[in-house]
Image (tube, rainbow, N blue to C red; front, side):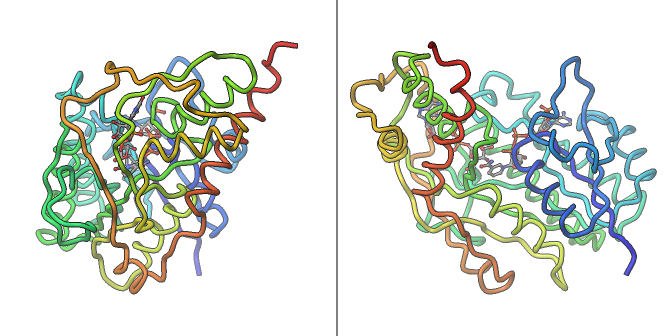
Length: 325
Ligand code: NAP
Ligand code: GDD
């Protein structure tokens, strides 16, 4: 069988790095779309950078995306690029809509005009469930977004379904619950905590300032979740899937375990700072991934406890060289 080509938007992000690893292992030619930057953004893929082809494009720019799809001739496109940080979506709501909502249409338009046989994966989000209408959340649960990011992701979700129904494109939407790793951006709560714990342990920081400790999330490991993305595009027909662990924990639970992993008592170091509260909060998310289990044979392998410990140990290793003598 001839080698398959995958085009990944958002390859420099957390998920892009794990997905690129997986697809290389599966024998794909992997092409990553990156936007121009004056600094090096390849940190997460530094170990595989020589195995990836890069093309320059931006979700804001239709002609660059169409030209890339035309030149690369991918069999599969994974649209992971987005403005993905929820708080930024309140301060930059229009830009978030341009990237995270309309950006999806731009990629789909390129697929439709260049070759509608290209398989397309859209990175949808549990943030679409927002103020949850049903627990646990599944593919049929109605959406009630609580942030401009959530609103934009719902647009991306429905435009994906619309291109499937209008043009018969093999387009799928993966509704992924929060997934984390040592490669997570430091602004997201889990990595902010693991990085903060490591800094406190090593004497590089005195306290950790956080917002709402009562929020609950269904947290999994990013390496497990990219496998579900790939599996969705290997099915006989396109469909949408929830990907989650089925377990939920509070930010406080994450904090407690993370500090414990470094033999520290969290209550001595954590300061609740209302600056990190959100205008509207998503209080509790927990997913039902039984359809993904049944149809894709997917299930998570890394437990919450192991995820927390791994993230703290990785940050301790990374920061140890900077600890005061
Ligand atoms: P991430 O680490 O924030 O990565 C986002 C990626 O998008 C980066 O590679 C970024 O490139 C790229 N990007 C942003 N704006 C762009 C633009 N205008 N043109 C081209 N590329 C652009 O996100 P992630 O955690 O890997 O998540 C991947 C996707 O899954 C996102 O769509 C996110 O919304 C969605 N999602 C994530 C989770 C989760 O828990 N992680 C859950 C559900 C859905 P730069 O390096 O240049 O900034
Ligand atoms: N970031 C952050 N910083 N969040 C905090 C803090 C803090 O200091 N303190 C408490 N939190 C709470 C937030 O209020 C939120 O309820 C929860 O921690 C998780 O926040 P994030 O880690 O920023 O993630 P998110 O759930 O808002 O969004 C992530 O998951 C979505 C899937 O549900 C992102 O990866 C989105 O792109 C993704 O779609």
